[in-house]
Length: 78
Length: 190
Image (cartoon, rainbow over all chains, first blue to last red):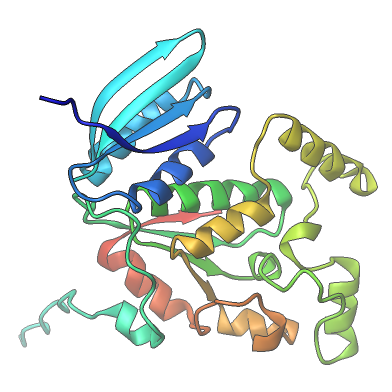
């Protein structure tokens, strides 16, 4: 069985608060319910911000990881 | 002793009273928080309107219905950038001459140094990829943040609807704002 594919990507590297969240909120509209959105950011504050955004909007944060100062978030649209 | 009349019910739809077309649907369709955000933007200082726009763009991104009531110096933030002199009489014109209206012409409340301060703030913002007030304002419009002018301030400064940026809600008075505030909004005064 194939894993769920990323339907849309947002490159928010280098962007400061609140742009990673704003770009994500705009991009989530372009995918349908159940599809995955991947966001890549370098803002350290985004780790807590994405958790808060996910809680407020109900779009599940299915993965949070970081590598060498780059954060990756995978969101499943509600 | 006669009974005091019942406390008024909180069921008035103030959004309907504002009487304009509904804002675009919220960006996200998740569990939208039950409270709205209402910022009373009183200040025309660069750093304060910047903070206002960061909060409102984020709030709209989180699916919260967001409104900004623009009053006193705060209204000057939302005059079209290209308007140089506004007002009808000499005093109103003088006011706009001394303090140029528009989101791109804000001054810092401290360390303005004839524009040197805002210029340095702008340079730092670009260096660190922080969105400018102008960019944030455009984002706010895209995401359906409502900007509501104060009618009294419009009159006092002699501002006409054509002086204001596009997409502003019709002007209202303090009672509408208090109504929103006491009904279902988290209020902030900036």
